[in-house]
Image 1 (cartoon, rainbow, N blue to C red):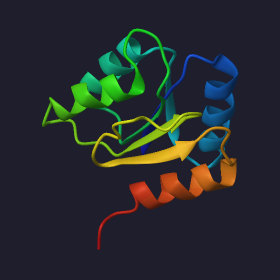
Image 2: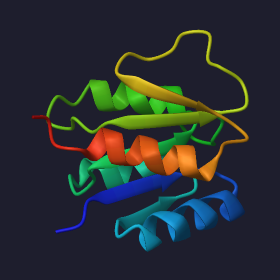
Image 3: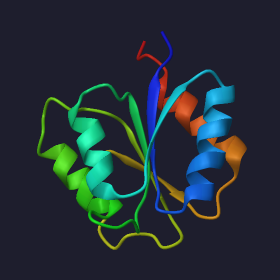
Length: 117
């Protein structure tokens, strides 16, 4: 069964490009265009990885991650994308600066979803 990845960004073209590339890699991709929508999807428990922008409406990426850390039943790896590095980087988060290289993103996704041996 393919891993499910949630892509959250308020810029629709970025969401669609990332989603298309990840779908071509065989992943199931869910989309959210703000932090509140992303949190609602994450609370359903079907996501294996979150790729989120930091500067999104309703909950920033950092706020979204803080909510996730408040729900111990939701332990998904996170890639936080932003043009600006957050002053306080949340723990257990992989940072990817924007603009990003799509091949590097795919490599990070594969590394974060690889089963621990």
